[in-house]
Image 1: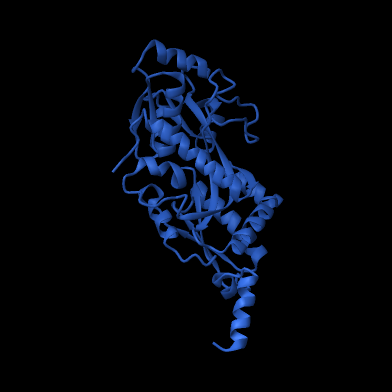
Image 2 (image 1 turned 120 degrees about the horizontal axis):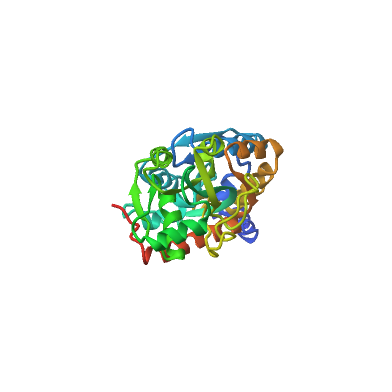
Length: 322
């Protein structure tokens, strides 16, 4: 090796430059792909598009949305995990697709912690316990008392994994037996709830908001740790007499493992700045979500806490599917 090449190489090593960083000094130079493990039009898709537009304007490159629905989110997450770790692919994941699916599907072969690098938390979406408007239960304590008095007589509907997890957490904490009625999708469960065919559901507040406002459904409480700015008058389950209940949906942004740290740091800063923009916040509120501009460490902590929580739940409740 020529002397000058040795000097250049030594200089690069001394500065701690990685091959990936040297190869991409002007990142980004082309569009960035946001993989959304859900169909178009849903909450995750709406959030991804709002963030992608703002982020693209800040980075000077468009953010392209790639909807890859299927298998409860496994299809999109698997695709993103196998993408090149060059800073041009990220996955818009949720507490289900990036944590709970470990315990929900045998076919989920991706490690959502080891196979990805966290970028930033994006939003929270509150969940609520809902009953028919003519239900005799007007509070969480009344629902729990009835379930304890009549074990196995009340039922709940679940059209998504989130609805299942939320209600099973409630059952475990309260020590009650409420029978699950499985649905293919949330709208079917909500329709039967309004018809009085089932007793309760735990769904995103946004899912039932129109029918709450028109008087066909009643919200007993939110299931998250604290009240939501979207419905500040609604108490939490914990405030209603059942401490420890904490279930809400959150959405975050991850890159494939091995993505250069310089790029991750830049993305984290730009995402947080984008989420503080009033127009972005307005769009998130329109999707019944509140912005949560927190960095990679906060996202990693939330992901790990969710995994730990669902792992504990899986010890007493059969969650896994084929």
